[in-house]
Length: 510
Image (tube, rainbow, N blue to C red; front, side, top):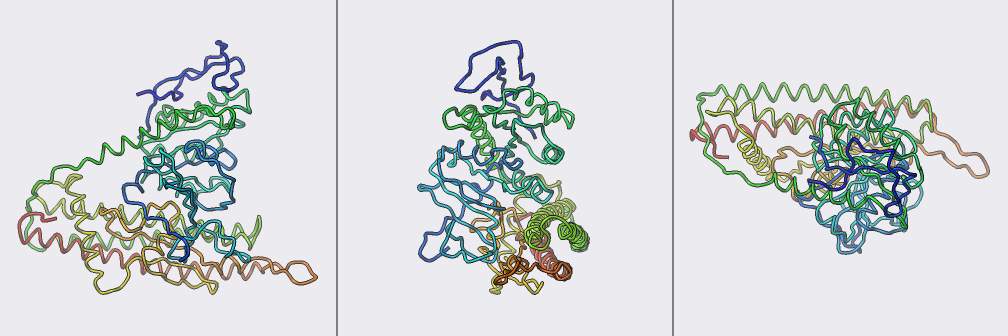
């Protein structure tokens, strides 16, 4: 299936052709080959919560700062608007009948209009996610996630990007034509080749650089050295100048094809009866061992991760902007920790179900049976919430370096940068609630310079910063340990109900 995407060999330097659609060719033509794939307020209307299917139908647009990511998204959805400062927020573009923008801020259960100038008074807790609605036909097929433009591809941002792309349709990686791919970009893409089914590359600013075909060839060579899967990914050279837009339609067709591929994989499969071969209570001991081992390993991983976060934050205190930058760096690291821990919960859930029911049933459970069990386990977890206690909890670090808990799916959604977790219509196969942790508004304000009347600003003491950081990380370790223990206990209880019923009746009832 061909959509005009670029495949090696890309460049024929011997053929002279006229510019196409206003794109300068500098005496060069580029061959076109078929595509390849790699495996708020009461006074405002609140945005609707996306369904699970729409949350999974998203593509992540990533790249370094000033690579043209946002301009590319605007061109894809034919959106013309004045640029707005989004800072470190992840910007999610969804379909809507009228253009609107909403900010999701950790610590708040409801989205806020963005930008809401009437509520801005001095330093404030920045949004994790900004959702923009636009009446674009493409957005009816899929959502687009624009990664933060501030800074470069640090490990935390890369991890969140890959997690969102793996749960969605794939990754669109944007590269400027001024320079070849750097080390951070190549490391991210090597990880993407291992985790993602679909990756596409976009070369921007080709209207500003006559030598862009050589740069394209150089980037293809760098990717080929990282593995054959990246070498066969499609490339889309584009011009985003309003008077000479070129190459965007081909990329739009590729994204629509991704959406069609995901829709084809969602066809329901026939549900068949599954009988039980095991008897006795051995399965209970098996379940206990599996849960205990994974819970201990998860808690240990959190301790190691927090030690690494402590080192990175201390390094930031000793360089760069120092204390004023600490909240931003720590919040981004905690965001990545939340994503990593939530992903581990999903992995452990799948492996425990596979191990326990693989020994319990007469035939090893296939994908359909595993999904049936996970869906039933989710219902069991939700049914156990009749005690009135909220299981969805967001953790917020306070100015006293303590950790406060805010309950409810809305609170958890405020900490989700991509809109892929939580919400009113969760994935039934996601048995356990995801984890979410961030800094409250006061933590962002407390380390800003104090402006004394008639004098220079007073900077915060770095020793105080380090003490606050160390104590906060200790509290986070304790609270996350409690949260993980409760989630694994929920999983054990839910699977005990399903397995017990299966043994009693001799057939899997899920």
